[in-house]
Length: 94
Length: 252
Image 1: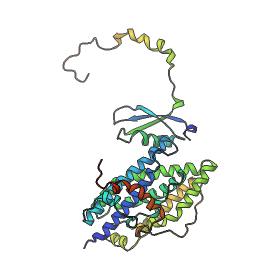
Image 2: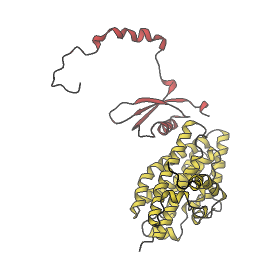
Image 3: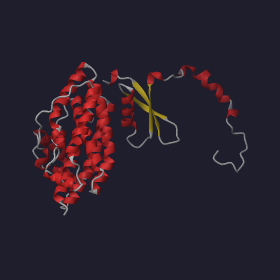
Image 4: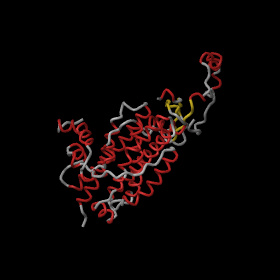
């Protein structure tokens, strides 16, 4: 049965103020049941307060074969991390 | 004067409905059509068994003979069970299970909604917790009734058959007898007969959306509340009670 059902990626917000995080996927015949299945499979232990479900086919993904040109150039640009600044003691939570 | 016997009886009925349906749904574990549905049904079962534990706990306390929820669940014979006949019926196929769940949960939401205002605080507290659980059960079951009813030719045929089979057990969920009338007059029990119109309206709306025909209500099948059960309950209890009866002092 589930072979006929599209796959949905599930994102859960664990509590207010945090962003939704990918937790896995479910099969479901439509969007309403995708949310219900996500609730039943991924929030059994109080994992979340909000669920997003997205058709897996609607996700645009980068090509792993392109990882070199996409990501490696950033490796040598450590100055993009703001680690060279002196932070005054009075500034907290950085 | 408070009638502890009536309250014991009422708590048993509430607890046994949840216990027996929970046990039935547990039979799907590992056998549902897909993993997601397997978990949906197992979640329902766990919610129901949790409710049963609480209601039977109240029953045992009211009875005052030292029987706790486990004792009442596992060491009682079939004639002493007070669940309605609908919950003990076999699962059948998925559509039949959904038909049973839809009818039962829709009625249970209305019952627990009313019970939150019970003059017996223990029942009101259990109902307040459980009504959220069963509202979800009713919604998910209705979703499936609609999808199977308005689905393929085969799913529709199975859904029609499922509803048709369970239709005869609906009246019993709204049956009132002297025990419950007395408790209702005291504000402890819900007068089930007042819930029927709302139940019918909700069921009709879902059936309409599912493009399913509304069967005529046949002559009702009654008796569960008095211990007159179908043959199925004995088999269910044999499985459920086997271990604690064979090894009475077994612990986890």
